Image (cartoon, rainbow, N blue to C red; front, side):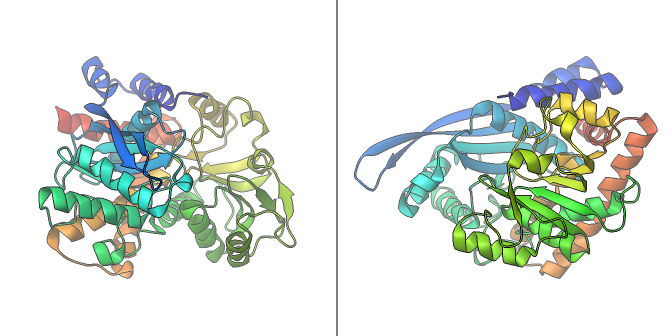
Length: 406
């Protein structure tokens, strides 16, 4: 398993080779401001006590309060959380929002806990970290396997401990708990806005054949939005299965099938394929929307997509990135492509602090120009330096962070 933090630092080194930012600045960015590990004791339903390991990494707050999700996953460990916190730092700068980067998590398989155990665990995470969290300090959000309901429990726990009634410490909450309209589809929609803004410039047709890896919140929303905008989604996958239909999938029926059967397998009229085969399908646009490190040295030579839109965090390793660049396969990088989620989280934070509520229409009207602006600035930066889009994004972000830090 590749260490995601080493991948993130390899990207930082690469950016430092392209532009001289000065050794001191780069040295400071190689370490988070803080990485915190906590043990969370949870009374289980059978009366036994179990200890879970939790994390919060506060990477850099030069631009504003630390911002970043909390993931619940059996493979979550500190290097992954550090990498994600670093990428959040870059992402907030790319999206041009006044927030820094952080990330959190708990090593747990949430599917093995009852709802009550999950609630006790989530509140336990807040109890251990309440002194470092706050609307002006550190603002967490949902990530893999965490939901609006979990954010509501955490918000409630934080209010109990601190008396803070703004509800601005956690974003991604349910609407009735101070959440924002449009947060669910925000990452997928932001990714579409970025793709749509760059499509012609990276040489893709008006009607693209699309393959989406990952059918969770981000992947399913992105697939739906692409299809609604007359692109043809030919294949999708979840963690266990993948399906292909050359003339396009009816996504509403695919969602219903997954809901009824718990899997994408055996969807009527589609062919069952593996996740590995899915990544290697010939298509105009490949959208990795699941986990990190899915395109590596081992499979990059078999990638037949004309372009890649990264909606997952870190789905392509640095070595594979280089090869794709040499093969003229443009990659719209995660720090740009999936920044719609954090942008709408920022809108939620602003609404909470001002005690306002904006409609979904207002949210999307604010999101669109921010995504288009970031996409075009990065495209220009990449063109001007004859580098790939990811490095364009990194250089743009590092310029902003350095200016604030110094």
